[in-house]
Length: 274
Image (cartoon, rainbow, N blue to C red; front, side, top):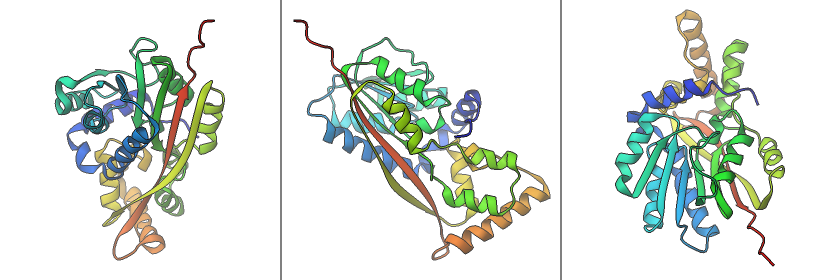
């Protein structure tokens, strides 16, 4: 996988777009619902203390609060305005802090469950982020994570490529971890149990402009090739739009396909003293 954009740029982008985020997270909302159902299926008890890594505007914590009303909730997000939105949405039932997934600002072993939705595609070091989640969860605690993996926005990548986008802009389209990447990291960790699955989600848009606008409005413009200007860039967009409609258009709409990787894992419990 090519290196993701600098962490500071990601934080700034999501910070600026916090007010618009909930209006544009179509697939992300479905991922949150699916992740909550996965947690409920996996757990046979109500977790006492839950952490959401990359909490955004609090959609995942909000659903978990309904499902587990007695649980203490915490969230962390790299974008300060996202933290404010999440705290406002859930109120006193949750404590949200500004921080990085790769260096979580929490003590070791204090959570029963760590969750994360549509975030891990942004981290530069997936191994570091997963190790941090394992560090803050108690022995025998659970991780339930979902994020976009390789194959996401494949239509957009192909059409940009066909439109002769230069290498610098094309490189911004390849920021998704592969399933092999994830399996390699997970297999190197000392989990008691780990299950990986991939599901496909599709959203439909009126045209390329509406798709790119939606991506930009959630702060994720870097995965869409960033921004450009001038006649050359406008020509690229026209050709990309033409190719997109020609190859994938149906009923005057174009699809955006996402590959969503779900990881459910349990850390090893402490051995009993004999």
